[in-house]
Length: 117
Length: 108
Image (cartoon, rainbow over all chains, first blue to last red; front, side):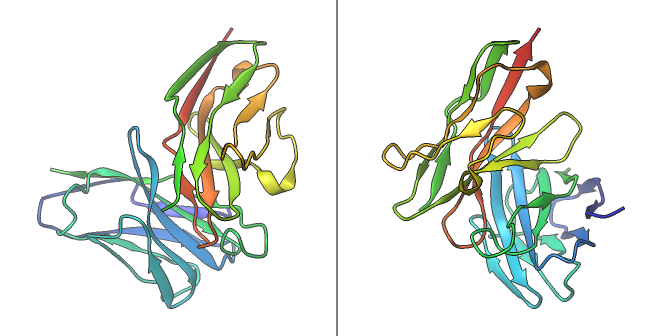
């Protein structure tokens, strides 16, 4: 079954703990993205990566970290520095960055819901 | 900075009525604009993009640079159109900026 796989779907964390959300794709896409979705605020870009071993901060990167060691994987770590981490997190990939060559269409995972207790 | 505004959180229409979901953007350059849709219990997916100039599921959207708008329209709404719709903007940084979304409810 091809596509984007995010895990876990639900995650609970105590305050002060770091947590890592997994995102794997088997679409052979170069670009991957992390968005945060809050009610009434739509999707906000956290980090994105156009190619392996490279990534850029999005609009709300503070308190988050990522790595892109493999083309198919783009894990997101929510650190204890993130002041309001409870949210729904969406991962996406595209065959190239939107605005560049290729279709640029984003393919999304099913999301991970993080709750801080 | 780039910004996408969708002024309506909820739009409720009856089946067969025309639909217009509003989207305004702020960006001084040449943008690429998209509409994404999320049906109940499904993943967020691309509906259409302005450069394609195509009609998908009866929906069309025209980029109006003078008004900085990219409204989504459909002449006759169907119940299966009920979903969450997001307008999105790419300013060339190769990542999309999304609006806050509009929930469309099509009543029978």
